[in-house]
Image (cartoon, rainbow, N blue to C red):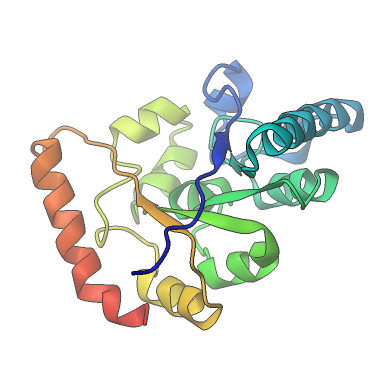
Length: 210
């Protein structure tokens, strides 16, 4: 029987609490980000947590980049990883949050995985609506309004190319955790029904992860 990979400490920003980042999620510009001094403080705090956890438990830490937080855009993810110690802290690659955080209608998930490959230690399988991101930007929704309007649908009903993603993970011999994350919205039914539909979709594409 295969041995399960070691667990991680999952670290996250206090997402959804800063009014500017919450209002502008999905359309963040560089001037809305942290200053160089703030990045240094943010990264050194994350490093301290990760090193302490590793020294006391032997476990590594992963950061969950997240919309409406300070590590949302691809460049912000890159900055964070560049400032932190790769021995102790990696990334929860959340494909749904990544897609919305790009501020674009064209998200190449395999290009993102190539960019952050060495630090992707954990995967959140999540998708993004083909319509909500653009509508969110056009109508200037805040993050929570976008969520209520179907930003993250069930797997298989969004924009993410999961077959391509699974082929990439298979080609790179990914052995880590993959977690399905699903927000339940009006009209989607009960959580159990929604989870069952996402599970059936995953069964239909699991052949790409071989």
